[in-house]
Amino acid sequence: MFFQIEPHNGLAVYDQIVRQVKFAVADGALEPGELAPSVRELAKELAINPNTVARAYRQLQDDGVLEPVRGTGLAVTRPAKKLCRDARRELLATRISQVVAEAIHSGLDANEVEKLFRGELKKFMNFGKE
Image (cartoon, rainbow, N blue to C red; front, side, top):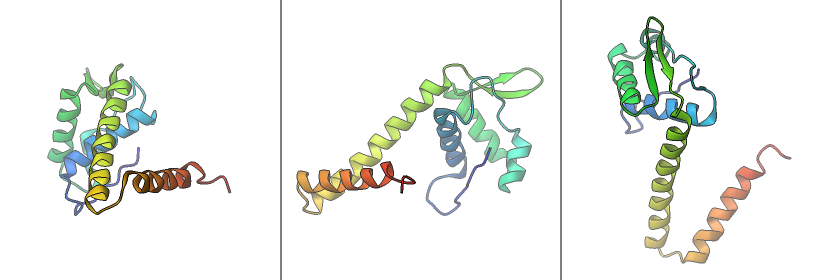
């Protein structure tokens, strides 16, 4: 599993790990029953303190995404995919709301905002089809 940590993006490192694990589960990159990387392994890979990874994993357990498997580590729970998709949808809805508010406050009308959104969406939907 590949994680990318950006120490200066304003989001705590443990929170970046939590989000990336949730996105990986939502996308199917981590399936229910699959083991998450060990704390030591992930800390070494990311060159961060193991306590940071442990904190992220505790949060993921509290959120119902990971569960301990005796003698082997932490595995993705059965309901994790739905939980993670719901969390991703909520996060994206919040971000979209912030962008729409910024656009309206900057003087754009609803039609202009919708046109911008549709234009950006079209770019991504056609990505790689050329």
